Image (cartoon, rainbow, N blue to C red; front, side, top):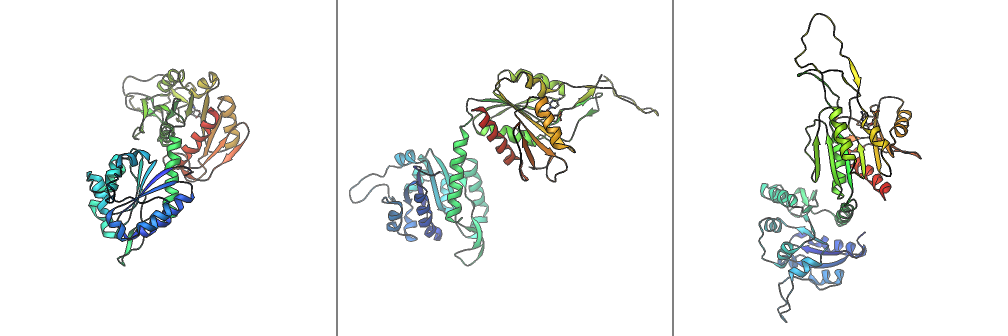
Length: 399
Ligand code: C5P
């Protein structure tokens, strides 16, 4: 995973600098090429000789070598790096990174780096909890810096709390995860998808309507995951309180009819579709133009069938990928298999309301993924994890 990756390991003046030696060794062992930049104070905590030996390169501290005037170019270092990893990162360095102070080689390199930047904070618990540090971390995270959270435990001061730098093994795992995410980020560029999500609303009169419990969370998570991988995503959404995911174009609709009309248009240009919406199967035959008045008698509303969006798209699917959902309360597998065939889906994501944590509203889901060959049952996981699995499968079918 880290083979051939260029990593600048920045070390700042914290007692946790001793862990940077192990971290450097693990990164090199994983195949990364590591260059170490230390702040002047970091040299008090770990020797340049140790770090030079482990990284197999001289370490860098000053802007130039005082012996011969050779310039340590922060610009070319910044260009060379695939990642700038500052571990340990002190409160002081984090504050300087936030404000743009550039009074040592590590900070000038940070400002020049075009690569991903990750920091592993290390400090005393009160310094870590201080509003200033927390705001600085929040600002850096907003700007795209990955924060490798410190752990809780015994600190150099003798106090116990959150502030210990994450262990080297944990940092290496997170570094790998960052590279994996970057790799995935481009895997669907140039592809176009439509996603339907949320509940439709079928009006009865100007005041009342028929709807269901869908919140749209699953569909929004899928749209987000597709966009993260570089796809162009049109999210055809029923009413929801969710924010539009970054990089996604949202088309708001109300009724099943509106959703159908938007979907058939967008399907023409799409490479695939995920039918996640909970579409009403019936709609009032006519919508009263005035509020219906109550009387002492019972009332009945005549309902007519809506159009099946998924089925219509499935009929003109061609080589494209079409994914459906099945939310069942009983006879789950048989019903899902029926949908797979009837609607010409490549695969169906089945969730059962009998499973705790699955279905509407929550942030988790428990799904079985069913295609013509197999049915794979997954454990309970977050909706964004389910989205990753679904998009992985879409990707494997699209190639
Ligand atoms: O038939 P059923 O509603 O259970 O099928 C569920 C699947 O079909 C889901 O993927 C859902 O989004 C889609 N569907 C649709 N249009 C409808 C009804 C369902 O796209 N009118």
